Length: 250
Figure 1 (cartoon, helix red, strand yellow):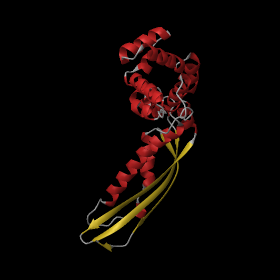
Figure 2: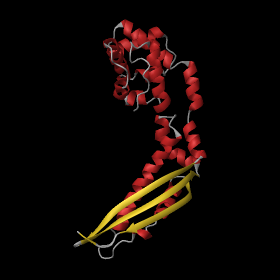
Figure 3: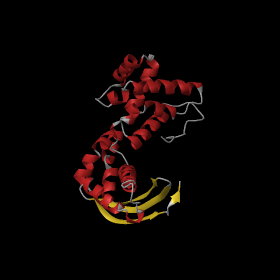
Figure 4: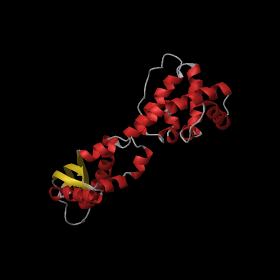
C-alpha cells in the first residue's frame, strides 16, 4: 500500500489528520481493508513523535478489534461508542472518547453519501472501455542432447459483453471493495488470462517428445477467445506471433 498522506509527519496527529488518513484508505481500498489489513494501515501512519506512536498504537487496537465495522452498524452517540471502545480495546477514557469522535467523523452522513454515490464507479468504467492485454511467453523443449527455445507474443484487446457474468465473477472483489478502480479490475482479468496463456503455451511446447514444437504456429488468440467467452468478455482484436530457435546442444 502506498503512503496515503504525509500532512502530519512533522507534528502531532490530530483527529482531523487521522480522519483524512482513514477516509483515504477507504476511498482507495474499501471498508474491509481497515480490518483485513490493520497492520498495513498502522505501518503507514506517521509515527515520528512519541505522542504520534501512542495514538497510532491505540488506533491499531481499534482496527484489530473490529471497531470500524461496529461504528458503521448503527447510529452511535460519542459516549456510547467510546464505551464500546473502552470495553473492547481496554483504553483509557480520554483516548476512547477521541477515537469515538474520530470514527463518527469518518463515517459521517456526508461521507456515507459520497461513498454511496461512488459505489461501483470503477466497475461501470471497466464495462464501458476496451482493454489491452499484452502477453509474452517462453519455454524450452529438451530432447536428448539438443533443445529448442520457443517464444510467443500476443496483443489482445477485450471489452465486456456480458455485464452480469462479469459482475458475478467479480462478486467477491466488489463486496470487499466497492470502490475498486477500472484499472484494478482490468489487472484482475489480465492476470488470469496471462496465467492461462503461460500454462497453455508450456503444454504446447512440451506436448511431444519426438516432434519439435513450432512456436510460430501457437494460437494464443484462440486461447484468448475461449477465455473471453467464459468470462463475459468479447475479443475485439488479437495479434499474435511466435518464434523457435534452431536445434541447439544442451
